[in-house]
Length: 246
Length: 86
Image 1 (cartoon, rainbow over the protein chains, first blue to last red):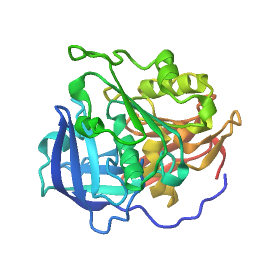
Image 2: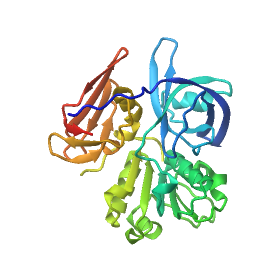
Image 3: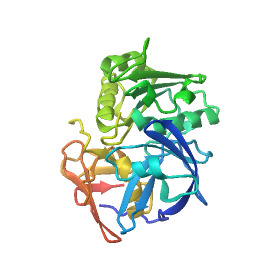
Image 4: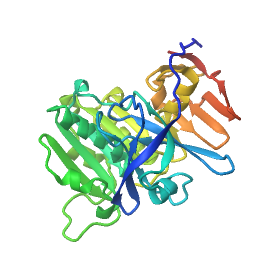
């Protein structure tokens, strides 16, 4: 295979926790201060490394929740059998430090010049990088029309609920609640399927660009559904979290 | 192309590892499978991290394209499954 030039190295840096915000009972946003943070693009992530007293290290990738220019923020969902997320969501306090490196990634990135219309599809904490995209769109004064289809287990599991409730010009937020719904719920109440995508998504003739993020099975089914609606595979950007909750 | 199950993530998740190895952003790089010739961006590959290392597989034929194993502070890289990576 062809060689690739070695440019800079990605190095681990010490980040200090500046704020901790509860989003849902299982999800928390960490605002971090990283000296000399080079800045990031909407949709990128960072790697986090934790080191135990015996030297054992665990690394995980977490999507950046904040827009470019805002302080670095990560939104982390607690996985009960996780090695890293319980510490990040339960033990970390403002003033604590942890190791990060990044920003990482160039594929699942949106910038105003990328255009749209945008279909954003999130399963559970897959909404995190999409929130960075929404904030970047607002911040940049972009008028690209957006539809966000957001699948959560229940209303109390909806991350950024208050923020998403505030109407944004040109942005439609469509929720589906897959396990339980509040009384009088009139929205979708099932997993995203082909029929729902046909109702919610831009038609292929609109020339849309899709960003799909969430647990692997969610992303697989939504991406296949969009291709079934005529979206070119190259216009469906995907990011899979594995088995994290939806 | 068969649907991936939850044991898999994708190439986005190893963006940091790839930057460490190659010194540059690689999730948008294009890989060609040496077994079936499928062309795809690294971000779209199926990635498994069973604990001992990291394996990236072709979405079309499931061939192993890249293997990364970290032994002490050294990352060993096997790219034999790729015809090219650019």
